[in-house]
Length: 283
Ligand code: NAD
Image 1: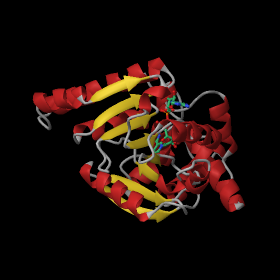
Image 2: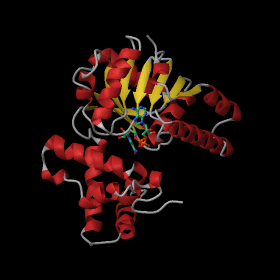
Image 3: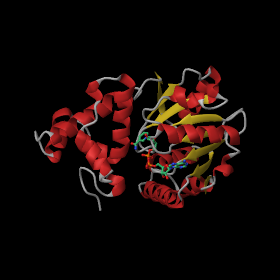
């Protein structure tokens, strides 16, 4: 069955971006979150991004209105029962995701594919809690979703070819480029990126350089478009810590130990841009 209706669970920075690109590509989208404020914030940010795109001449008013008309919201998981594809983008916590996939498995029709946008967690383990493990797959979008071209597609051990081919097709329809990778901690993107960010935090923690200087070295010296500490703030320091813990536990290798400073910032609620303070402060 062709994918027509997409449900996105979690209206945070990733979920709202995924919902936007799906609606812009012509899919009917339901954006669901347990928190009404998150839904409101997600929709407001989609409105703002589409308005800016119209102002810059990248889309027309008609396209903006069409996108918004294909977007619905809910805080009730019971409303997701008509999906052909669910893309989950809730917090990076294995227990929360496993419980959600069990619930979804009981709500959505038998043909529905369940995808997760996890940055690092084992898709194989998430698939195993459902009665449709062959229809579970990873779709790892990059942040900010409307801008970044890449989607890492991660096949769980159980994912069948039909599911994989449908997801590859949807990814193309979203005008993204996919790279297919195997299900190991951090996949490719975060296995390489997160240890670099963690090392940048260690550099500050050990008093070797300031936050600004670490970022300047990587921008001007390595031609990175933004420094690793700015990027960490954008990703969310809670998400960064969770991913480092997944790598540390998953590989059992001390080279992945999260920096104590990262842990302390998360304990303080300094999650980065989304909470107003991380390595930098945000208005
Ligand atoms: P976020 O904190 O901005 O948003 C998470 C949202 O999930 C919140 O709005 C929260 O209310 C909602 N939520 C929590 N439990 C829920 C539940 N049971 N049902 C419905 N909604 C629920 O987080 P984010 O940065 O958008 O990350 C979401 C996922 O995307 C994570 O798995 C993360 O690892 C992954 N990811 C993040 C990035 C990034 O740069 N931030 C990049 C790629 C992938």
